[in-house]
Length: 185
Ligand SMILES: [Zn+2]
Image (spheres, rainbow, N blue to C red):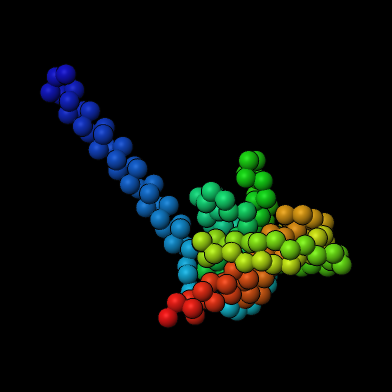
């Protein structure tokens, strides 16, 4: 290898490392955006006024970015990235990676049947809690073209109920996390 070739190779290597570093910093920033232990405030999020100039599209974009860097994230809410507005996203199928968002989601119908299962939460990694959820829900939400409705069951129904809890300042996993802290004196 000639000297110039060696120098070029070194330069390329340096550039590759720089790109990698930048990518990692972006990832770290994104993680910090929503993995905030203790910083998730227990307050009700505000409805989004779609006629205002509030940039809800950026919030959805950031939620999608944030969930995309997680391996197992199947749902995320705006308060988890520090925005106390009523926006949630779900990614029920990790294989297809399809993400659906809901603005001002409202459960307008629920079934009597409940199911019990353990849930995790991206804001409280390593913790889980058992939660009773309605088997099926009918969700109403706002879009640029007006109200829309959709029925969900199974895991999708469960994720939506977990995320709506966040919008109401609640989280079953946070409760479990707090309990474990109380025991750690
Ligand atoms: Zn959660």
